[in-house]
View 1: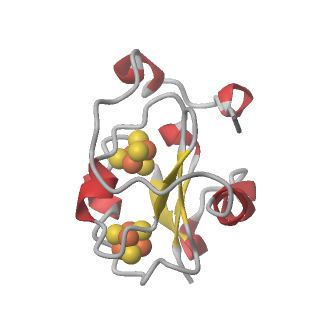
View 2: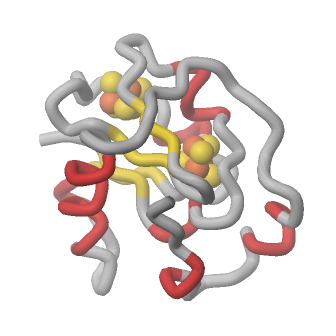
Length: 108
Ligand code: SF4
Ligand code: F3S
């Protein structure tokens, strides 16, 4: 099992999660972060840090967002690791209110 980043992160990237991960297993795309399931030690400390509640246990992914499990695993092998918090994306506070935004997901 691992923790998974889900849809609310898209276009936000607050990165509070990155600061607390003890094993540096977050990877960064243009407008989304993923967790490497092979690196995640399931400690759970990142989950309450996310302002958008985007991080969930793999067994607790909301209905309709199951594809994020595979998406995290896939892009953790492609995107660069991120190890330090940075400013959120411009417009993050506005995008945090948007529920369905997978159409905005950018892989590169
Ligand atoms: Fe990192 Fe722990 Fe979150 Fe996994 S659950 S991504 S190890 S902080
Ligand atoms: Fe994304 Fe939340 Fe981390 S918005 S970057 S999962 S703190």
